Length: 428
Image 1 (cartoon, rainbow, N blue to C red):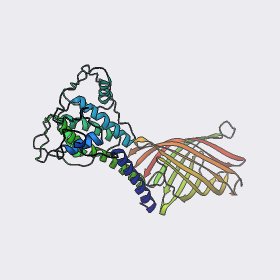
Image 2 (image 1 turned 90 degrees about the vertical axis):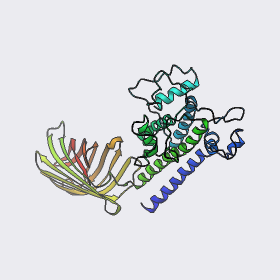
Image 3 (image 1 turned 45 degrees about the horizontal axis):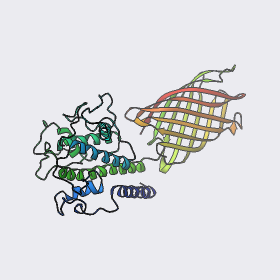
Image 4 (image 1 turned 90 degrees about the horizontal axis):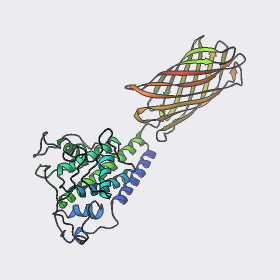
């Protein structure tokens, strides 16, 4: 990475860190005991209550100033907490985490009274997919008054992380397999627990090596658990954004990346509608290289039918960086042509561009002009352009297809060619 790129990355990372700090920390939050009468100083869940109730607003106390931490933590309360959690994660990532359950029957939860709580539940279930794979949550029944277990919490957090990974908002934090003394592969939430503990590393077990999945959570226990889990989720989202930003900074700024060699077969018509018009077939090879930060292009076109002809263009310029998925590279050079009508030589000016699309597809374009100063038809300006698409085939081999047009000097003026092209590109 160049010093300039390192400086940009440092400033950007500092900005991200500052944004996270501002969005995740209150202006002031005193001890939980100052707010809740029943959370004494030094209580084992004090830090969890401070994190989720005073800093994050993931839980609320009662109007009388009590937290009631020993009361069961219900699914209704869990849903309210998840609503706040997702709102903050979406603000942090600047992306919606919605995940409509394509092809699945929607949850209707007829056991939940109409109102804001039911609307929130249906959004979490249908638009975010959070309650999938919990055995007793059905399309028709939510059983909101039941206590949440650690297994259920792990499943919901795992559903959230899988959706975030699909959106490339989080990336796996590790490999391996966390082992818990009180669960095995037959445990109903085994895969989800492994996911949150090993793949994403956002939930942990207990010091004795257990996970205690069937354990029904009290409000204190949930506060302590989510008070540890939520900061780890936020950190994972922030680290993923930082990694993506670093990768973008490190990404090869040169056009199309690596050194592509493209071979195209062009079937064209020339001088359509004129008496001297016809069809022809040509083979084109284009090679791009980047020596010492420069961009060099060599393009050779060999006319095969109806007669042999040759065109060679060589150009170069310093390599420009990319602008997100868009890459544009101008160049200066020279072009030489040799055919049945004679030879021509002159300077050329052009630009080549590519727009990267999802799934490693791309759109590419090239345009330029050559001025023939020597040989046949001196002073002629000959235009050429093309537009096409490329897609991965196998390994570094790609398929290309497009349309093109170019002009060649003729005995009395110019020959205009309109072509359809198809070929392959190899990157190395």
